[in-house]
Image (cartoon, rainbow, N blue to C red; front, top):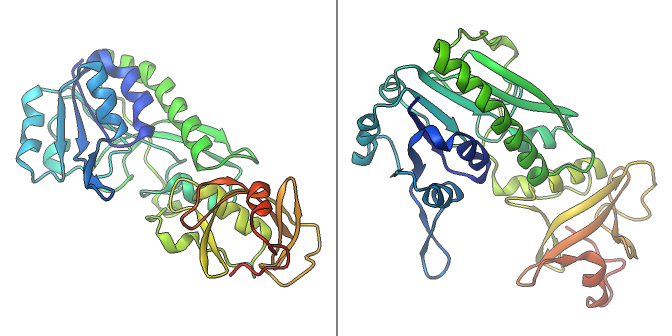
Length: 307
């Protein structure tokens, strides 16, 4: 079976590696200039495809001239995993057996670009992976496979993404064998009345409101650790928080946002309900470090107000 694989992020790579023997081309988004030197930043899918010796098609949109070459590979199947672009109907009609998509949620819940972050922001205890037959609507195709994955108390975006990406990749070989032998199975219709959405994450969503609960702040830290990171300000400077623990039962000892104690675990910060232990952080123009190490070099930190 001839497969064209679409992906643009690290989440895609395990699935690409599982299907590499059948892949005749990899489609990914073009690299964007980054940093002061405006050097091109190749994504992880491009690097994996190069290692595997697979033909690569890089596009900004399906209007690009390069996109027309997808049909030249005479694919039987498209596999789309964390690609980052909507695939138009003309392209969906190219593979003879059809296009499938892997989505990291229990569809119809959390359709859209940021399902893992939103599951963590909402404090869900369960998520999963869903394989659908793609149509031209966002994440609305019929379901051919779904598996539940528990969200652990200590999960963040990075750990949960990795587990979901591996789970999806492990499911692929059996599904592809069935499609190769018998064609695309009829999927289960989604209940659109139960659909929820996971819109794009914005930078401002990382700002911590200390008036809210410690649990809410901790969910921000875990969900947004990849980007933009949960953040606050200390003495007017940006302070990013990368690891924390919420204690919803302890009574705050100061105004919300006050650093009330410093321990080897980190900075104890009052919130509107409970306290948050900040364990890893990064001050503006400084390196990322354990919060306790930071406290040893920041005079008068106890009693400071984070805003």
